[in-house]
Image 1 (tube, rainbow, N blue to C red):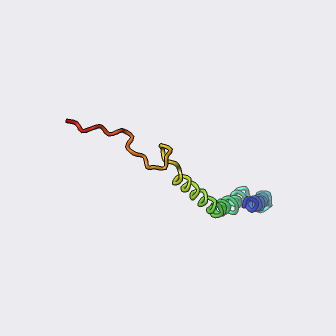
Image 2 (tube, one colour):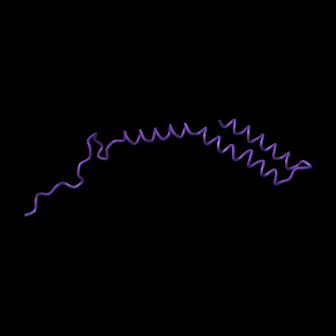
Image 3 (cartoon, helix red, strand yellow):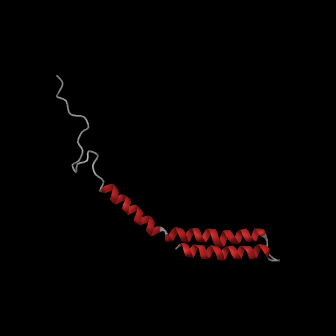
Length: 89
């Protein structure tokens, strides 16, 4: 996944350099080339390609939370923290 991003970044960087140093190009055009051909599409693709990893991490966290031991260390549900006192008269 990262190899694709590095390759695309290299290609876009070369496009921006050609735009900046050509006789008909401008620095502003190079910046827009870098932004619109590089940063924006690459961020969208990396977000979409990272979705399965985020889903896996979320499921692992939910599973770890549901299988966590109870606060008192036993498998029983915790009771009241304060022992009950007899009725007042």
